[in-house]
Image 1: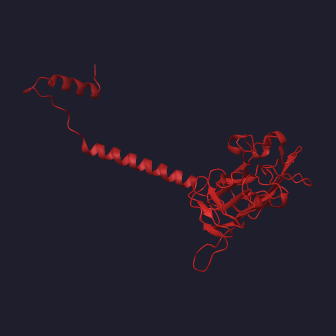
Image 2 (image 1 turned 90 degrees about the vertical axis):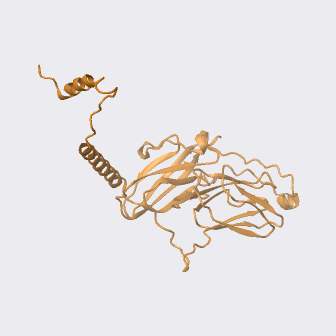
Image 3 (image 1 turned 30 degrees about the horizontal axis):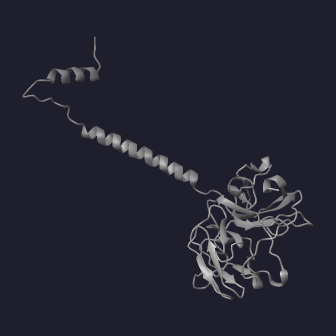
Length: 301
């Protein structure tokens, strides 16, 4: 009977046990064979990494625009008055009541304001069009407060682009953007610049510690692919990368979904209960999603 090589090696090794002065002889390492195995593994892993990099590389070209309009299916009801119990000579001037703005529905169009739409991830992005001659980016927008309320209930900006935080009231306000380093007292009639340095995964709350009824939301995105719906519910995001599937996130303050996610029935967009949908755009395309109806129950009414 012919033994395999491994069996012969085992017999030889066992036969050597006890030979010599109490030592076991081990087979010598085959350095050449080890080097060959190592070279093969390195080559294989390098090829796999190159393949992964190639598959992850962006393949689309050009830019496109996505539009749509959020509408409300139901009656929004009367907005509730806020409890204003400080600095009433400014905050409730001439008896004007401040109202809860968490759900703003336009009576004529049924459009829902302040719905946030943003791209969760894109392989490439177009830089901002406006740049100063010295390379600095100008103020991208204004976040103001007047009559003891934030004038923008939901505010969006691009990471790295400064914007002005202004106080147009004759009294001081403290503006606190949760999850960021910005928590400052803004004197009466003054303002200061703030440059977001990190993304917010979802809109984050903005408050005034002096006047607790003051509340707004802010969202900052690196690529700037974010929009807040207007009074009639319309939104538009320009310069999106064409030729690739982009997943978008939809959020509203009153949504009963997880973390404010808005889920609606749109199977053609692969819309999920997490408020996400997918779109692929062609170069120079202006794609209009049309009316996106949100059920009253989805916004807690």
